[in-house]
Image (cartoon, rainbow, N blue to C red; front, side):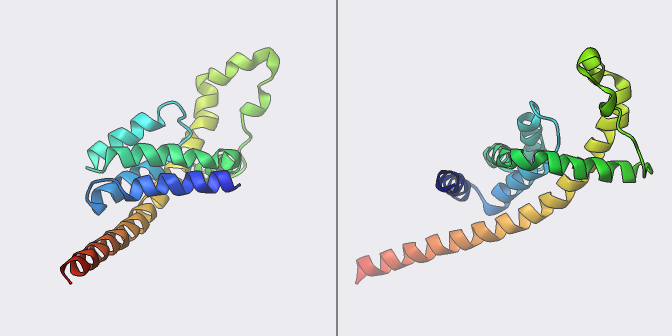
Length: 167
């Protein structure tokens, strides 16, 4: 657990020390968090880069955070279940039976069918978009505040050092 905490602290330090405006880093962070909730493994990094470019956020922050988001991987089945249920509710399907339940080793190739995508993938994607759209602004404002405080501390340290050097 200590290794994970130290690694996480190092990643957050990288984020705080990015040489860019707090708004830009916070926007990149928001893009990474928002995209990180989607089930689109394999393209999340590219999507985060594209979102950061579109919203003029720091691209490195977006990549760091979308990959940092993967520490939630052990909990993602629970998150995906919530997203799936939310997506079904949004589609007006209150008691929907998943098509995935019918997939077995004998017919595993059916997982790639359009029927399964529209029945199971679409609600998951819709739910993940809601999770991302809710979490991204929260991530933006929290990150912006943290970066502004860190910037103020650095400026105060620098003034103190200059004052100490003069006296």
